[in-house]
Length: 136
Image (cartoon, rainbow, N blue to C red; front, side):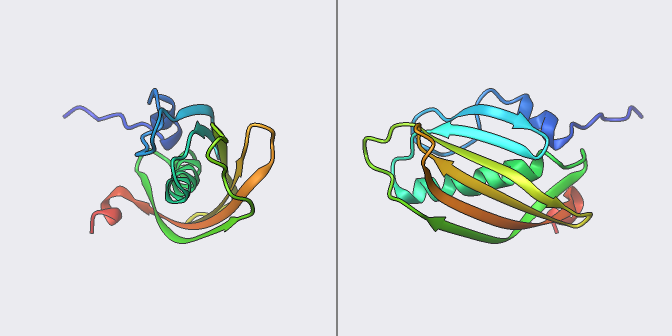
């Protein structure tokens, strides 16, 4: 029987041409490094921005996982600092892993406009599980 080679979370993210997001427009990767992910997108509504934030936090966590790893979101906090004006165009959502324990990972995110102004901040707590545990 041949062993199946699985990709790490970082490898999976790096092999996708566009972030797998349900956002309007065409989101694009700006940075994909271990524990640090940036996506540029044009959010159509506040709830789309919340979805982008959650996705980027998840991608940051995923980028640190081994091939058999998965994660479950335990907690998500978003603070909106300024409204996103309809003419804002592209925003940049950066997520990074703040602390990386064996079973629990903490990530943070910022949403910035093209001028670098912070529109929102967020934090998340994720439980690291195996792919088998995730399907139970």
